[in-house]
Length: 445
Image 1 (cartoon, rainbow, N blue to C red):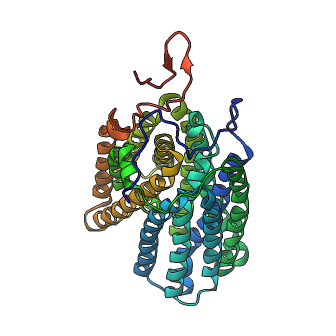
Image 2: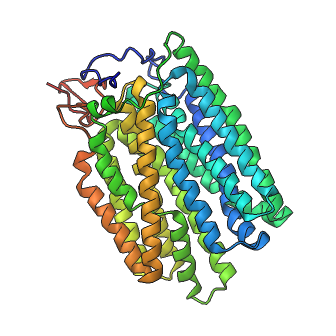
Image 3: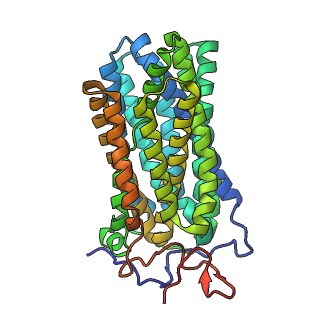
């Protein structure tokens, strides 16, 4: 049987539940629980991420190459798992269970790394944790879209991204305290606690979604590629892919900062500690900008916010390429990168939620996640090679070039009039009196 095509623009989606927030509210208990879930989960696996290099190389006596192989393979599995988890998340009845199970699997596998006695065991457990993380991602994103009215998608995803970025601040800080208090291996044992709490928190959102979807039928497990194409999702994937080809792993930014800070006479430990603190500021800025960017998306549309995020990255990477040794200048560059990811990721998620009907959103978020994972792996590998074989400047200028292409192609971030009809915002946005136009959104004639 062929995939279901997307319904004509303006046709109500029979799989979309009624929205409860007709009185103007969008921040419900369920929406808040998704943000709390992202904060808790990211705190847990960021503890493990911060401790893993020392554990693998110092405790288990593995090599830097083995650590890179573990991280690269796990990141690749995340993309595959997101692609698999997308069709599963199309069914409203499965989303809560998939999300809860994914958070639980990530937590247990992450904590179990602390019991590993060989590098290969770390690799297996990290792969399980990251596969669970990828599998749950489309379910969580689709679950969030089902809890808010279309006019508030930007704010909802901005809040969720803010929670995720704040977790990336709390996790490394907690890791530093745990290592100093109880040691490297025990710190990994404690990493599962925030993840368990995250698995409990997502059940609140799942319960609210079940109430809204009480009358929904079961959806078949299919990618529905034809429906995604008919809705116009493929065209926005071009600027997103260009963005991800320049979206480096933050470890390369930390490495660049550490090396530059050492040239000012600081010890290796002092430079590394200062670089980690600057990285924490990067995540804090990302949290604030993600939340503010979500409000901006609901007013101006996702395209302009996405383009702004790419432009901020161009400035940030150009700064890293110049190689300033001053900590406060590096802080500015890290902040620009944090603001860039806060804008871009929020815009990408809001776009998929606005563009697709409920029965296709899981597949859409799966495609988005796969594109993000593939682009990130390619970007990090290529820039890592340029960084080592040529120079750090060459690597960062290469990444900045992709970000510049993303800015220039931002016009493709919305589908054309013949497909999804999403121009600059949701079709149900209220019209401004006296203008016959929704604020920041062009009405279709």
